[in-house]
Amino acid sequence: MVTLCRFLVFAPWLFITCVFCQPALAQWRGKLVGHYDSITAADDGLLAVPDAYAVVPGSANYHELSLVYENRGVSINGVATAYDDELSAQADNDVLFREAFYDFSLGELDFSVGKKVASWGVAYAFRPLDVVQQEQRLQDFTTDPQGRWLLSVSHFSSDSSIGLFFLPVNRDEQEREENGQAMAFKAVITHGDADWHLVAKADEQPVVTLAAGVSTVIGDGLELHAEAAYLSAYTRLQRRADAVVVDERFPYEEASFTDGKQLLLGAVWTWSGGLGLLVEGWYDQTAYPDSQWREVFDLAREQRALLGGAIADSAIYGNINWHGRLYQTTHSAQYNLFVRFSYSGGDLKPALDFLYTPEDDGLVTRVNLGYSVSPAWTLFASARIQSGPVGSMYGESPIQRLFLAGFELTLNR
Image 1 (cartoon, rainbow, N blue to C red):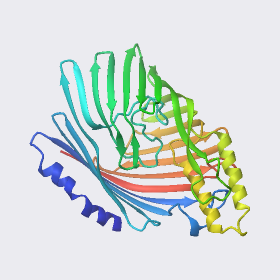
Image 2: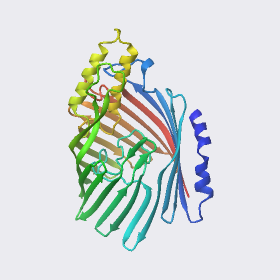
Image 3: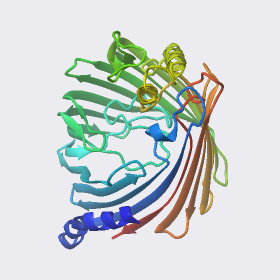
């Protein structure tokens, strides 16, 4: 309730800007979202810590008010957010623009300038083609992604499209990250029942990414898709060479690697009545290898063996908490299998997801429920359980269970 009150005081400028200052021909739509999260940390296992040293909150609240304004090629998506949890001293309030761009045409060319979402790909759980937006997938709660600042020129025909994108320095206000300047190219060609995607990106690092994808429909209820990418260089966290068993500073650093490869194969079956089945498997060389996870857990065992000794327990548990940073990425394992069962034929829309890591038999099970109370009101809930044998990535995760429940109110003009 405290979060909601702060949020309602924080956000009114969005209404003033988009409702009262709009031209008569403009269109707008608004959305108010709120949800409560109940988080269960691991109470045993190699990365478990007592409540006194916990960095995982037991509960959290999130509220979001967004308004989208559209008029003659201008599109603005403004959002005000409020978040707090039981470990935070105060709520984290923010106001930002997810999108703010202008689309226009000159002859046969289409231009776009501003902050805009550019999410590319034919897959669901993991997208090697998504070289610009780099959207995180498989989230417990999905919000509209942050757009990227860009200038693009595109040409569309009946069976193809081609586009060139200039990306200046991008700062993600929510993730507090910066992406350097880059150029990207995208082409989509339709041939028969198949759509072929070609993507290239080069940034100032310099890192070159080449990607390709295809999707095709077979019969009335089967769709097949594939994506592959090559990265000339990539980074991931790796333990510092000079790190000790119980370190006084963060023991991981960004390490650089070359020749990264990603490959995904997937299929979607749909039946009359709204039943659906999605199966995807992928290899991601840029994710953490199983050997690195084994090193992490071996180190955690060594650290736990020092508890109650000469080194303060707070220092040991602090080092164990640092291992949790390896979980804060889109995908933490190189080999993955994803299966999703869903139903969308009525007001109640359930879905059941399984994410399996075959190298260590880890498993993430997620149940999602959405219920349309009316065209404007939707209620939703999600439950996630991470499990696996001792020494598996998901079995040793600092977060074992998460339950989320909330609402979404949509208004259109």
